[in-house]
Length: 259
Image (cartoon, rainbow, N blue to C red; front, side, top):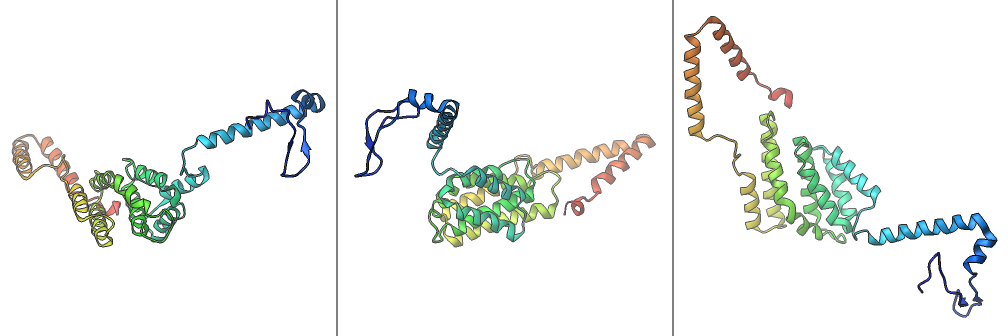
């Protein structure tokens, strides 16, 4: 009607069809009769109106702030425990109408470089479980397939980097690699993505580390180290002691602590 809390038409109208006519009071009458209390009421109405306008401008399919906090807490606390992974998948299915924001949040959590590798693997399990259930009879669940397909390449890159984390135990690194390759194989059985697309993902994951030296480089380093050892042997006793200390550090095994 064009009315608002500051201005309104002074035309009589019926609140209900066939009901009595109601004549709105003038703004001056409202303020004169009610004074400060009515001013506060109008300020409150103005605030609620501003909130309604803010909600109207909010993007559609956006999680409520409380729900977003819950999902982020799930991602922060996820482990490789099946119940923890299931909690994340169930949340995604229960809020499938917000699939776009959920996938975006999950992708961001999966590509944070500072995330612990096993925590990242737990989040990867959540993504895989969502893929498995995207064909379930749940409203809006099917939208997860295309949304995940758009970001899974970045996720695979991040999982490869997690498996190559410096100082990561060999068994932990092997576990991450085997689980990612197994997931890609299972996705093929589920027919969620095409075979060519999955082949590209597998090749992307197994892409060699650009920092990893090839056999020729490793052999050259061995020869260089051998030359240095010969020089140390012909040197002073102090240099020999230093050489022994270095060799002890190289032979030390740290995987047990990591596991």
